[in-house]
Image 1 (cartoon, rainbow, N blue to C red):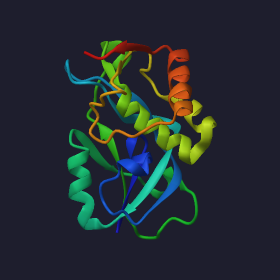
Image 2: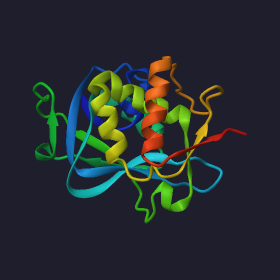
Image 3: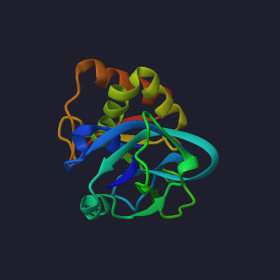
Length: 192
């Protein structure tokens, strides 16, 4: 068995593609979420980078060790790092002796806002729906407030999702997510 910390789309069970063994709410210390720019026209991705003492909400996914290559493939472009036990709090007792990983961005200087990168709304919807289901509206608010780089364009692809693991939102979810990101400085721009 292995475990990995999810801080973005991995928080939403609907996006997981392995038959994982369990998922628990968790907080990791020492990393902070940010929107990582990529060369145009590729949209920004959510990532984490080291940030001393910062606490990031998410989940710990318990999975079979032989599924790790599939997770590595999904997280291509990220560095798999070990999370030491003192840097994570997991709802319920953590499984003893299970290695815990986090996928971290390769070092970059800028976040998406500073680089003028875009965020896919369909990707963001999957992430925020996961946080809403596990942490309620307060968790979504915390996510938006604590994630760096939201002050950029969000590509309105909700009607025709470009994200391969897109989810279906209720009207209330869509309105909540849009209101929160607009208040944080994002601009929703038409797709195509």
